[in-house]
Image 1 (tube, rainbow, N blue to C red):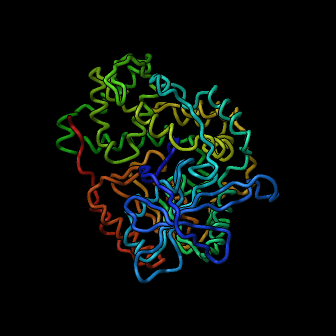
Image 2: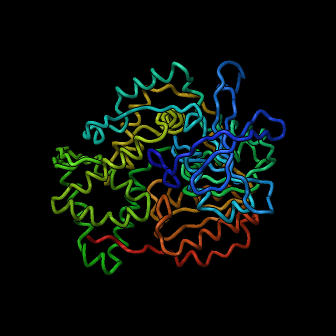
Image 3: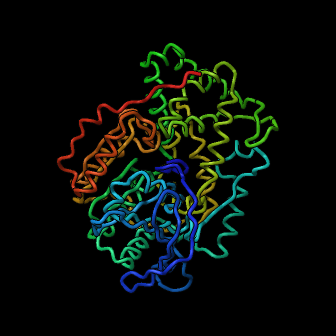
Length: 484
């Protein structure tokens, strides 16, 4: 997952407009016509829930909703509902991208997007952790502790930070489902969104027709304990692919040795380099540490296209040119780590993940890896400053279900590896588990992805994991590597 692990790159701005109000089933949901780029018709609105669902007293919060009605004449009754990644991503901000990615599903099914509590337009728990005027701040602590303290103090004036966890959000979603008049849902989650979808399936199984999961992060996947190990697996896999590729191997025949030399150099201490400020002609000197260099490589491995640049970036660094690596590190900190609702990310992970990582286990798994254990150490420090929610005793138990499930995982996913999917599939007894060759946390940019698109459509149309022809998966491949 990343710090924020998003299935589709965060897309496009939603603009609310006044139009005729629509009430469904006499509920208190009011949806108005709105505009979403690339979509002919959409409805937007909000739905209020109690912040404290247990007591049903006190503060209420509004959940932002986007509903894209089916475009064809034949409308099926069960929508496809999207669970965003993160934790902290906004589902409604991804609405345009999802609608344009799945036109054949939209032809017959509504697409439903609900910002999870604490994200997007649903009482967001936003924190500011870096200084845009000082690039070096983007190359420092993952969550700067002074900023974490300040953010907690600010958010606690109008939020109970212990009430923004996955189980509570799943019950919010079911209340929205009922208010909108849907009996059953088709679930679609990517990365952390798979955890949210699985939690919904566990708590409300009678209201699930089918589930599509990409990059499975089950409730027992305690982030970020295995990030170093899985990043190393993905890095070595991509480098091996490079050496098996004629053009890449000719350009970088010693890439594995060069990678070791880069790590050895950075372990000695940060390197100082001069880079150009984003959106500016000004140049500034910054220091790039081993931690941030490794983080940049990890995030490049999230998607096949940037992953195909990893050998080039490491080769340049081995020659003493760390500028591309530093620029990449800053760009990911700005656009990925600093984006989304970081307060919600802390509320989830400080309750559901960090407390369950055994002392010394994460450090042991990080030994002799390119990434190292900095992420675990720094997240632990941040969590000591954040309120910790109580989670249910059986929360981390594998979800058991016979609901049809299609599971997709990239072969070189550095966050949610194929082993996650394999384990999850054992208790999802009606599931089909597919590993996509050369895939990453995302799958965009691979050759032959029509295969996956067609399988998804067939699965949602039939509501069954049986009888899907997966032979075409073998033909999916990387388009090549960047060599200059």
